[in-house]
Length: 209
Image (cartoon, rainbow, N blue to C red; front, side, top):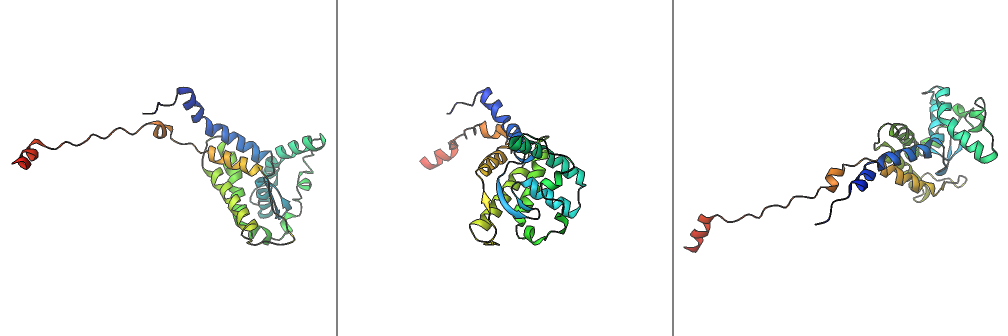
């Protein structure tokens, strides 16, 4: 029989979903590029950029709320690129979201899996800070399926539009799957041995007769 895992390893496994959720949140909120696809804003490289263009175009969320989501990634990108902090007022210009309401919706409708996956990914990253769940995993899988369907299966492909997938999508997948909290008691508890049934004495004597 295999020895049960130590308390330190079980503690690390129990906190794995928390660490993965936080890393996934940073990946989304800091807008680390994981793909490159055409969208309403021109070209989007993060789930947050895709989601923001849709939120502003549909006017579901206030523009200020969308800016709050975009600003941390804009600061990180500005510091890494040219050691400057972008202006709050010019934030929509940086992401090409000023005229997104007049953009054609067919570009996003052709990529519904990526659009829906981006929504789930952003929502899952925000909710995952409070409680780990499966929304991030579903969102990332939808994005991967949408990119695979268009890039490899040739669905809705346009020769003038380039679709790229960055290696960071592997990190997003690992974090999304690891953020799901599993029941360690069921995984670590061994199945009790089943007793072997013994024949009754009466039946044994009857067979001998």
